Length: 203
Image (cartoon, rainbow, N blue to C red; front, side):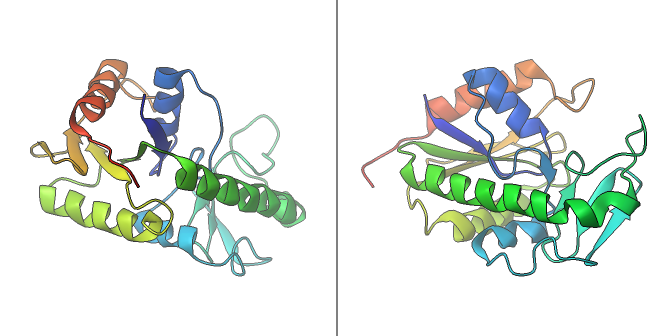
């Protein structure tokens, strides 16, 4: 089996990787929201990450870290039984959350470096064309290529205009699921296609 890792945008890819592989290890991108510009943080120092006062709450349920561009939905205290993040308690939790993600960043770096058949999956519905998908794949490869030069990349989108695959990169059109977890059969097809298309050679 290939070594699959989520690289955003949301939790969907991580959920589907766990479902398909029956593995439950957590990595950096699994349970956060990662806009395209925030991907670059993965190869940068942690100095400006989750710093005091450098954050804002977006739509009540997401905390945007202005230093990295990452958004957090699950790591900060909520108001009562709601999904709304409690702004009064964010500052007291910043250091704990930062420590967690600095650890996960190193864990993910090490895992990608060790993986013999490394496949990174980016589920991003804002991508429509092959040109957009190729640009995103190039961005990802630039970030992680220093860790694993043999990495393969899958870009998946429900809005893909057409599909295309090479021995290094796949662009897949997905079916929309009933909720955030996605449509299992469509993800099964993605994983099967990756197993069929990607050829791994010695690093």
